Length: 115
Length: 111
Image (cartoon, rainbow over all chains, first blue to last red; front, side, top):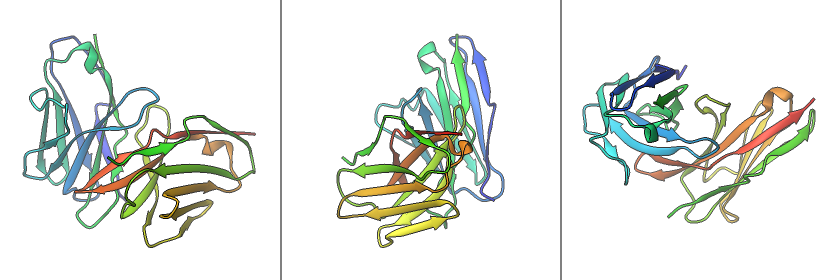
């Protein structure tokens, strides 16, 4: 149980385009979902927290207009990187938490490369 | 603010030995602490959760301890195997559904 999927696993795009990443909880209802980014050999950096049906709460320094998060259902959250630039290239990972659980379960991650 | 310190140097051990990884934090003791495993290019995988009122937790070859006086958690892998080679992350719950992660310690188990 507690499986989280992410799609796509890898994406390469041109500078200025937008990219959407999907995160799904496959066997549980995720009342809260989280989006992280991770640079090589560094810790996970929380970007935003979203509760189903509510606006996401962004961490300090994360541009909400650039990183659009939608948590429209209890099993799906999306992160859209708008007008992507090379500095947005990173490993993006989502996680999901059920209402009755203290544990976050992570997706496999999405490697974004912006040319 | 709460900070987590994990040994940034890689830990190299021989197969069959016990690996011990350390997680230290600086401020208040969290309600619970978690350990995750992360392989290169993959998302973290949950291993164990230990609460502040628990001294020790076990799962198969894994053992976690939580010392709120020392502000430290130790993560042990007994009878280590090459397949245990990965980065291990310590994570502290800081309230409001938020968890902060350490940078992780890389473990290499040599056959």
